Length: 158
Image (cartoon, rainbow, N blue to C red):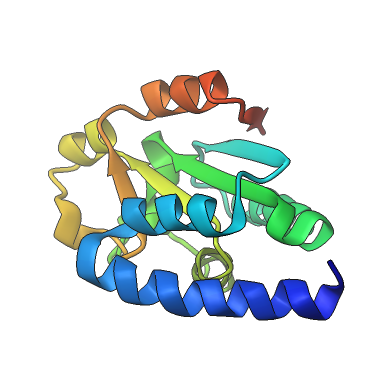
């Protein structure tokens, strides 16, 4: 499949997924992605557990590079736990540089999934309304990392 066809297919999917996600949630959009495009050859999950700006930029740069290299043939999940969840908060309690906030939103628009630890949210007394709209809440971040690895995702920790 040539690059133009891949980009057209991705844009078509994004339009469909955006509509369906708006109606039924991001988990449905991920399922539709797999149904329409098939399972990607590569699956990767990043553990995101620090609030340091250099760490944030480093991890997100790596995510972007993997997405650029593999395009539609990779699914990437960033699981934010502990101090890392502030990148997914509407009003973070720790400093998150504007460039990081923009990069997170951009990566989400390109199909990167962002999971946020429900346990960490509870310790901060946060609810779903405190998180960015594309953030998917999982009960336990460590469990999410384990389950994704069991589904064939390669695990990256920084």
